[in-house]
Length: 182
Image 1 (cartoon, rainbow, N blue to C red):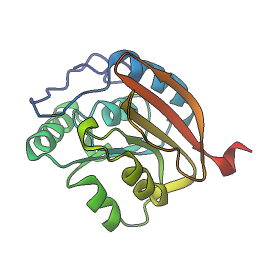
Image 2 (image 1 turned 90 degrees about the vertical axis):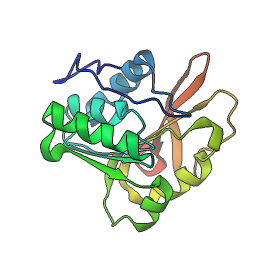
Image 3 (image 1 turned 60 degrees about the vertical axis):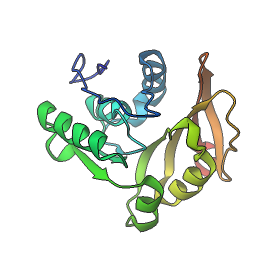
Image 4 (image 1 turned 90 degrees about the horizontal axis):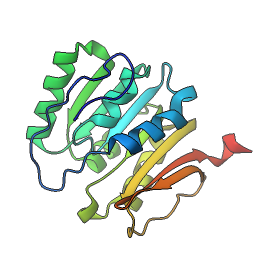
C-alpha cells in the first residue's frame, strides 16, 4: 500500500496480513482527502481501528498536525510504529495499541478535529464507535465513516451527512456537526 499525496507521497506502508483487514482504497482516499483538504492544515486527527494506518498517515502527509492511530492487533500496531519511524514522523504520529472503544472510554478530553471510523466489517461496531467517539471531537469536527454497502448504521444525533460515495464494496460518508453547518 502506498500513500498517495503530500510529503510522503509514494511512500510504502508495509501491512502484515490480518483477518478482516481491508485498507481503504486509493480511489476512496483520494476522494476523502479532496473533501477534507481545507480542514487538514494543523488538524488533530484520530484514526480508530487504524489497521494499515493509511488514513492517519495520509492525513499527516497532507498537512494534519498530529494523528493518533488506535489499533488492537499487536502485529499491526508494531507495523504502524515501524512505519512512523521509517517515515520520520516524530511527534506527529502516536500509535496506541488498544481496543478502540476501551481507549475512547479512558481517553482524556482531547478534542480531535477529524476522526476516521472504519472498523472491521464483520464486527458491526459502527453505532457503538460513533457514540463513543463524538465526545472526543471538537465542536467543528469532521467524522468519516466507512462501512460495507449493506451495513446498517445511523448518523449520530448532532451530525449530518456532508458528502458521501460508494464503490462496489463500501459506502463512505463524511459527516459534519450540525451546529457548524447551520
